[in-house]
Structure formats: structure tokens, C-alpha cells
Image (cartoon, rainbow over all chains, first blue to last red; front, side, top):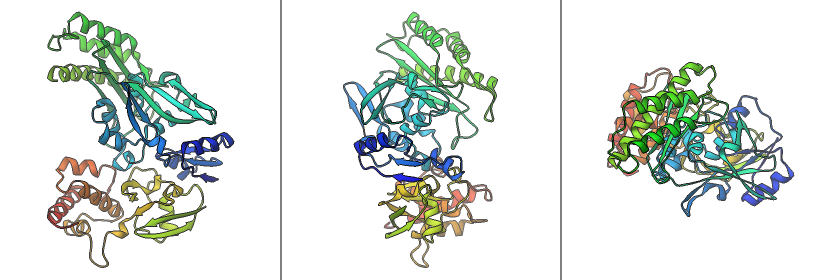
Length: 288
Length: 157
């Protein structure tokens, strides 16, 4: 095994073109475990943790461009206004893990339990991929195609993810056995788009990929419109809307039984998280 | 490969296997066994060190990722026989039983108090949430951090 230590993205892409079998390592929070436990012996490792291009984020014409190497700790410190992303980032691991783990790592590992991923799905984010031959942008829902499966080509690196800023309340919440160091048993990201009058909800850890719940999204957006809520945040919603929203979100889950929880529990948890998230969002906008 | 890093203020180098962790480099090549090797998966915090000033689990850093960088370990905290105030507080509060997790807790507590000299209890719990102790039940560890915060208040650091 050898380690390759490029100093710039261009250098890294040139290496990847010649050595597509080289496995990128960023924060190491997944890959180092595999190395420490003899589960992986890649022929080469490509350290992407020092590439300045990946460690930046910026706002550009109403979009957030988040470099793949931005850590969860930096998201919490530097992007407080992106509430669901910060909530997801804060729920990752521990301070030590948040100082190392990156959104690019979540994308590369592509675990359905990756905490940043429901946020990307809810924002309809794009994933920017680069190779020595050029760049391409893939919608997140086409990037991740199964558990730990993506459309990343062997000569490509994940450079960034971007999405259009959405005005409106939102949240990320997850269920696990304790507050820290927990892999989600189920997670929900809810985003209300005040400009587009739409609602997006994305589910983690309850399917082979991150799932959206389009039926529940249309239902609640319609209920909010019928109540006049988009124009007047103090408008009251019929009490059964939040409950029915939860039921429709739960119906969108495609969970399995595993060591962390049963399918039935996960489905139930999704419904509860979604119902609470809607109530929080309504309260947040009323208070704003 | 040869990794060269500034460890506790001194440039050190060692030849390590390419897949080796920073923890392996520190313990088995540089004679710094203070950072403990336990879970090797970032769960327990026993190997907590600073990499370029950031608190990390040394078991999750590839040794090569520390090349040309600054590493600070628990060994750097005491000045000769004079313990760091956090170490003193751990001794006095009885926050140490078997002692295996202690270096990691001390490093995480020092990291917290550098950023927040007067943390409330929720902040202390959050800051130590990546460190496991199977002996103490944590109460005396929290006492030690509170004691250290009081002692360090007003002292130049």
C-alpha cells in the first residue's frame, strides 16, 4: 500500500487519472476503521484532506456551494443560518469526529444513515464531481443509487455540493440510543419553502437510499395553502394535518430490520419525527 | 513511508506502514504511549490528541495525514513534575479509577477549557461525549472539569 499526498485538486485529479484504484481519504472516520480492523487493504490511499479547494464554502447568486472537505465542526461554527444542516452536523459523532468528518465523506461512503444526506436530499442538492477530463454535476437523488453505492467514476473525486438557498423554517432530527456517537436508526429532514410554497421531507436510515416522501409533501403543502398559512403564518391548521402528515411520511419509508432497530420501529419513528418537525416549523415561522 | 511531524514542539520522523494510524505512530514509533489504544474506531476517545490545534481521535487519522503538521499529545500538558491544572483536578476530584480513559478525558477537558473557560454542565457533557469511561460513572469526571475551570479562572494560560 502507498499513500499519495497531493497539495492541490489538480494534482489529486492527475493522480486519480493514472491511479483510479487509489481510495480517497478525508476525515478518515469511516476508512480508518476499515484499515484498523483489516477490512480494507486498498493498493493506494489518496489524502484529500489538504486540498484547499475542497475546504472552502461560499455563497454564489443565491446558492450555497459547500466544499467536500468542510468539516461538521466548521459547518456548526460558520453556517448557523442553514439550520437543518447545522442540526445534522451537530448530531454527528462527537467533538473529535466532527473535527474530522466531512460532507464529502458522507457522500463518498453513501451510507443511508449518513446524517448530512437527508439535508442534501431535502434541498434538492447537486453533487459536483471532477476528473482530470472535466467536471460534471449530478442531482443528489441520482448520485446515491443504493447502500454505499454511487455513480462516482473511478477517476473522479467529489468536489462540492450545492443548493439554492431556501427561505423558510426547517429541521433535521434523528432517533438513536444516546445523544452522541450514534448512527441514526431513523432521521428526517423537513424544509418549508416560503417562496415556492412547497414542502420537502427526506428520510435517512429507512431505505436503501435517502427517500423523499412526495405524497406527504404535496398533502401538507396543500393543507397549508388551504389554511392560508403561506400568506399568514398565524393561520391555524386543522389538528389532524400534522398527524396525517406523519402517517404519510411513515408510509414512504422502506425500512429493514437490522441490529439498530426493527423495520416497524423505524417506520413509526419516521412518522413521529415528521409530525414533530412540522409542528416545530409552524412554530418557528410564527415566532419569526 | 517516512512521516515527519512536529510532535509536542519537536520535529520527529519515523518510517511507518502506509495504512498506519497517527496513534500507531505516536505509541509504537515515537515512544509516546500516553494516548491509549482501545476501540480503534473513534468511539472511546482514549486516543484524543490535537492535530493542528483540533481535537481528534489519533486512531482515525492516517499517520501520513499528520505529515508536516503539528501534533500535541497528553505528554505535553505537564511541565516536568508540575501537573496541568486539569490533571491536578482529576487527581483531587477522584476522577481516575483504572486510569485507562484518563489521558483522553484530560485532553478533551483541556480542549474545552481553552475554548470555553466557564462551561455550564451541558457544555461539559457535550464536550466529553466522545470519551468513554467504564469505571467512574462520569460524576467525578464532571466534578474535576468544574474544579479545573474554577482553578484556571483568572490564571494566565
